Amino acid sequence: GDSVTQMEGPVTLSEEAFLTINCTYTATGYPSLFWYVQYPGEGLQLLLKATKADDKGSNKGFEATYRKETTSFHLEKGSVQVSDSAVYFCALSGNYGGSQGNLIFGKGTKLSVKP
Amino acid sequence: DTAVSQTPKYLVTQMGNDKSIKCEQNLGHDTMYWYKQDSKKFLKIMFSYNNKELIINETVPNRFSPKSPDKAHLNLHINSLELGDSAVYFCASNNPSANTEAFFGQGTRLTVV
Image (cartoon, rainbow over all chains, first blue to last red; front, side, top):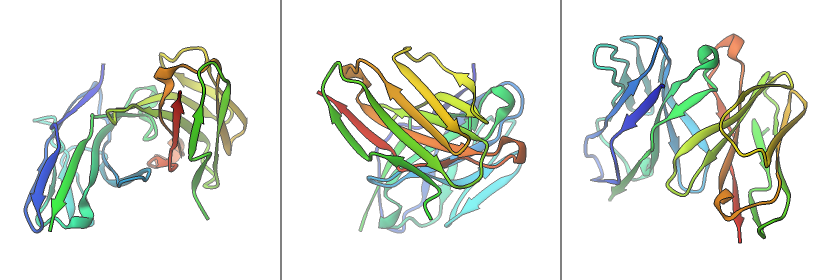
C-alpha cells in the first residue's frame, strides 16, 4: 500500500541554520504531497503542498519540490528561527479517490531550534 | 470564527467507561475525518464521512463508532474504553470535489486510567 518515510528526529539546529527534512513516498497513481506542522500543544496546520510532479510548494520560507523520479518531497528552509520549533509531518493523499483529506502520514520529525 | 472545533480538549476517564468527542466545522465542507495520533506522534486515519455517509473505515475496533447528525458535525463515540485508546484524536474536514486541503481541529487528548 501507499506509504511515507521521513527522516527520524529529533533534529536540533542553531538559529539561522539550513534545514532539510527528507521525505520519500511509495504510491500507486499520482498523489498530492503535503507538509503539515504541529506546534507544541496545537493541532495540525498545512505548511505547503504540491499536487503534481515538479510542482514546488512554498510558505513561510519553507519549500519542497515534488520529484516523481526520486519519489521525494524534501522540506527545506534556508534560515530557521526559534519559532520554527515544531513537529513536521510529510503526507500524501491516499486511496479512495485521492481526496486531500484522506492522508497517509510519515512518522513526523521533531525540530528544535536553539537561539 | 474557529474553522474546525473539537470538544473537549482534554478527557481523562477510567477504563470501561463510554465517552464521546464532538467535532464541528463551519467551513461548509462535505467530508469530515477522524485521525488518531499515538504516543509516538504517529497519525493514522480512522474514519471518513461524506454528507453523513461513511466512506472510510480503517481497521478500528468496533468499540469506536462515528456519528454524523449532519454534514457539519462528526462525533466519535468510544465504548468500553481501554488503556490503549489513550491518544490524541484529531477531527478534520475538506471538500474533495473542490480538491481542497484538509483543515484540522486542535485535537482531543484522551487519557484512559
